[in-house]
Image 1 (cartoon, helix red, strand yellow):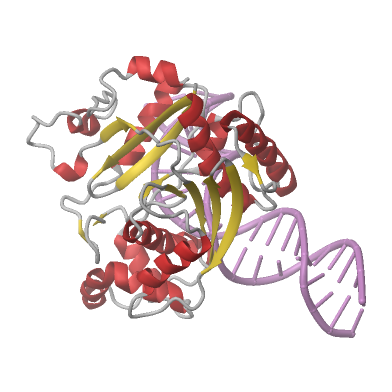
Image 2 (image 1 turned 60 degrees about the vertical axis):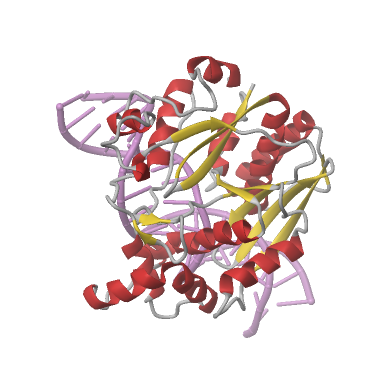
Length: 323
DNA sequence: AGCCGCCTGGTTCCATCGTA
DNA sequence: TACGATGGAACCAGGCGGCT
């Protein structure tokens, strides 16, 4: 699969033309001055040093699940987020990450199950700034759809990344968890001030409407990893499970027992491919998601291809492709 | 072409089950 | 009876496969 992709994508390591989406097609050409930098997609091959630690991070509102590959073995760890607070909540998060995984230092790479920024925010500085022009969809998502269309046979189902207004509404909801508020204000402080004057007092209180607020933690994780000198990428566990599932049918997570069993089998096979010794098998779907991010990166580094899609405002998304 | 249903993500709420 | 553990549905937006 990786070789097919490489064959179709000549000039790997430079910016590429992606002909399906006119916006992205233009994005690959630096000479097209009409396309703002924030809408350009960069596509390049990623190399890993043999000694580099690889850390997969599954993001939730209250916990981070970590899968840490270093020195040929894999261990799983969980970080609680309660108690993170102003004035330096993100720096405190970085300290907790470094304590739980000392391997998270310069030279390591991290794969995070969350976008780096809201759809219409530029994450290249903190607090984030508005993205001009505001895109209707992420450049990275367009690139992923194009990639999967070319690979064929794999379905890509992604939940769209909401815009800033959604997260500001979450931050103003009653009963907001203190650590989410502290992280959110540090990331989106300016947006929060601006929006308060214009948005009224609408809040989001039901479970369905607010579930994507976990991404506030994800945005902060990307920044915290930067503080530690770690190369951080967004990635997507379900996508990696599907890419590396072979002929195994991937049960949806709603069928929990079956879903965990098949994911454990895939992780076990990935560990064999990558030559990694797992300390234990994942016990939850969250652990399995963290593990698959780290294991697919390790497996692709050994016998596959690591491709990064990204742009300055959205950050970088890593796809680990099998051979 | 247009419609329907399925799928992804994490949280919340409620029902059910097993155990002390 | 009173717990905790577990399971399943609902929440939302948008892409996509399959059907008419």
